[in-house]
Image (cartoon, rainbow, N blue to C red; front, top):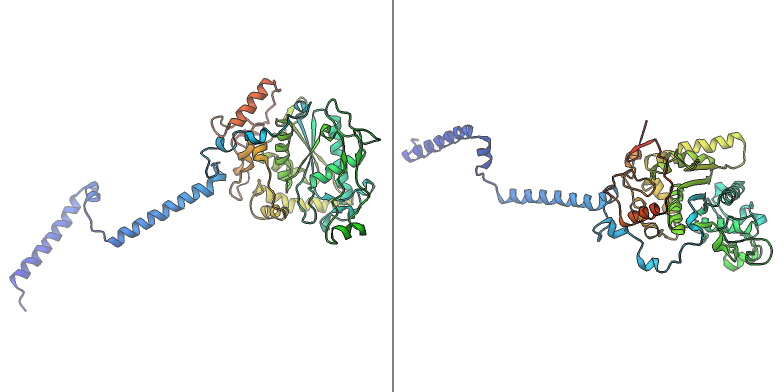
Length: 446
């Protein structure tokens, strides 16, 4: 079949046009080619817009949720950290009396870490397991060690008039509404020991008078009359010693910590609440097997200088007291610490992921949370710090802290921190020797 002239002409025209188009495209510059018109269907436009919207939403989600802890963004509804934690709200400050007389001289924080709840009333039964709320693995000797921790903490604080003793531990047991810290405090008061007091107070637990310590009749968890009154599955919580003049004792409680890291961080915040300032020195009393955990991990996570001195005293000191036992048992405890808990905190230094977070939840059966965002507003962003899991040293908090002012002074300094620093300058606080291990932002000299 012979093609019509029209077909031949049109076909030739299309071929010629395609040939010229190809030649023209080859001769055009890249800029001209990119700016040339092209045919895009409506479906293509919709797909491109969908991809762009999805990318935008994912990035917004990361910026709002994922990086709030990592980069220190304030919570939703607050334009800056200053508006969130600049100062303790005035409505709370108005309800507070001034710090006790002599509290301005306190600069040494002594921490006794809680491990269980004392639920008895008879001091002579302090080593009886039935007077405590214990885990199964704590039975058979641990209560003796708990008392040794309390005793050592009282002795250290009593020997140093600048020390405040903090018993730290939250409401960790579902069978007791008393906190570990409160129960330790009660046991110390009911012991009859000489307690540390503020200047001008003459507190004593012996004999009648203002300092007399009292408690209800002897009660143990096994006493039939108590079990019948509060229920066979409950523990007695009547072992709360009371005494006139307790406000003059240089002891207090920290009632929210769920693990060893929070024992340290929250006790610093509680010191700030009690005294109106932050400590210069810290002494921790606890199990010897946890010494490395506190010195190498917890103190480092808070950028607290472990190896520096002030006034000839170490700024961080750990007193370890372990359970009595043979060398094999003690070695097994230390090996267990190295294998289990230490590696978890080494990777997750703030304890806010995985198994460490699960432990905190398990130890908070009554759903309580701390007040230190208001009580210690200068470190509110540190209290909220949670870097991604597994970062270890790379995730250490880098912004300014009242005890470590070497970070960039133009970032992370709320009104509270600035006001606190100005206050300390007026009081001529002694200059602190730097910790030579820290070069910048928490990086350690290898």
